[in-house]
Length: 121
Image (cartoon, rainbow, N blue to C red; front, side, top):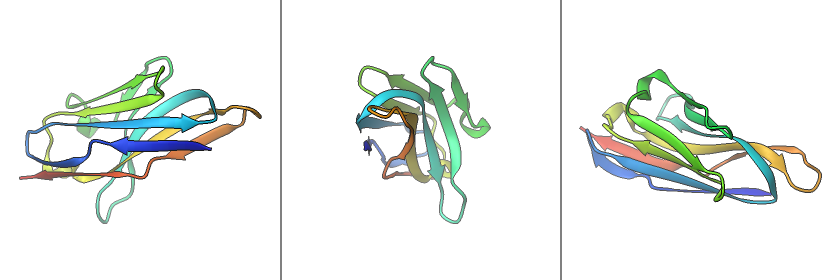
């Protein structure tokens, strides 16, 4: 009932930048938390950053000062600006959205399809 479409992944050199986008659509009453997770080969999925409807941001320590999460509430879209990229940032990045559905007003959690980010040394 809620679809997420991600874009913006790719291949960059160390020190480069990428900007990820994730747009949510469907029967949405409200969106509470939007965020990004990542999963590197052979590792568990980890939280990268989240942003609440009020704009409160949270980052994993390894990306603080390099990544910036933002959202456009009118477009139900979340962004992840990634600067000073390192090879250890290489992973599949997944968008995550939590909110309330329209109609029955039930809670929902949706995941994007994932977008590959590769940082070469």
